[in-house]
Length: 502
Ligand SMILES: Cc1cc2nc3c(=O)[nH]c(=O)nc-3n(C[C@H](O)[C@H](O)[C@H](O)COP(=O)(O)OP(=O)(O)OC[C@H]3O[C@@H](n4cnc5c(N)ncnc54)[C@H](O)[C@@H]3O)c2cc1C
Image 1: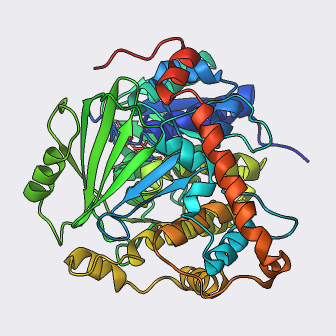
Image 2: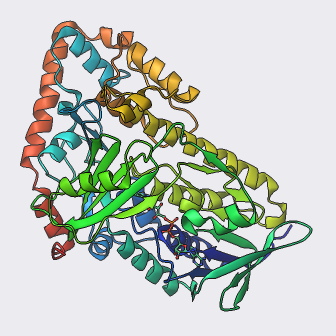
Image 3: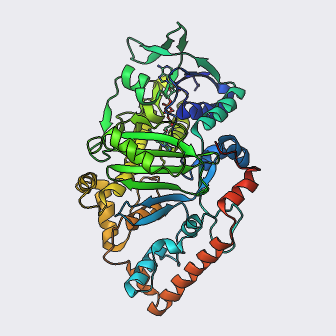
């Protein structure tokens, strides 16, 4: 029995994906691996990707970073969820929060008790029972433990370029070697087809056992060199262009992302300490860049700090995420649009999966590759389903883009989820999928999917008790939220000072 020995890893690309991979490899493989990262300042990074989901805590804890220091270094703010404005119909909004809504009673999920309460005419809007939602609406936040209720669930908004800088310094301190230069080509072994060498335009040649493709949309190693095809999901997720522009920080420091539906897509607002990130994601078959730019500029809350920058993309993923001795992470592996801030998470889970499955002898790693690809595909498909739900369940009749989205045939896995929810408000989750019951439930209800009945479990509670039960939870959420510091107050105290506005 033996291991191959010191693993030589070359990471192609130094965006968020490349530096996250470098930091995590350095942290968890330590001296057993020799890690080199190649990036080109002349090419730069995609420069977006500033909103996250709570799984980001695993990255910070995994790297052993101090939360306050991390937030100071990246000018981060707290994120309690995402507000979806006008998605169901114009004038309607809801928050997909990261916290629990209400309280389960024994085996009875809160949503079932709420549905019954609604049947009895004693229930308010679902979000009124979620502390995260109420705190978000009032722009309040705390990390202090709360009495008798679960703590707030949260993630961050941060500056992507500052994150890459932080991860770079972390990685270099732990021995990762950075090489500046443009990648010219990859050479392959004539027999096995494995990549043997990466060559740069300046003539440098780098050999490795494992190549990590983090070259962004270019997908130079997995896509271009190994020829792994692209599984196109534009039939499900038709948006294909984004315009991004930062603006000055506003007076509000919302502890949540805003996603505002637009005639041919949607617009994001991501509040950081020093500025706000803004963008307009749209489908170019329904709107041209000029109109999309005008729409974005007209709805900025503060002064732009540059010109909107178009970014073209195709939704979908590489058919294999790991082929031969090359694993793609980040945009090189695929992209599902930023609606639920899942891309950075997918980098993180990709690295975690790779570290878990990495065989002692890479040459005998065919089974590991197969498992990695199967698990990654399931993870991507379940996230895709969650995103598609937002689009297909809309009532924006008469908007051609939204009419088109309503007519999309959902993947079977999503169709089943919707059918179960329409029946009795139940969520079926399988294969350790990313989004929890809470998330699915909030978005199903937010997008107007109405269960016809509720689980008989909820009938076990006497009808007369339902109203007082719901009333007590609503009161508690409102009282606790009202007692919390504002997001700005808390953040200022926690990080020492909030960064100067740009
Ligand atoms: C509009 C938009 C909004 C997004 N919003 C979010 C969000 O809110 N939350 C989220 O989680 N994710 C978001 N994402 C995704 C997120 O931005 C990416 O997942 C993340 O930034 C990782 O990108 P990357 O490192 O794969 O690619 P990039 O940032 O493009 O990095 C590619 C790297 O490869 C290098 N490179 C490329 N070609 C060569 C070459 N020939 N030679 C040398 N080096 C080369 C580049 O220099 C760069 O260092 C968003 C993406 C888009 C497009």
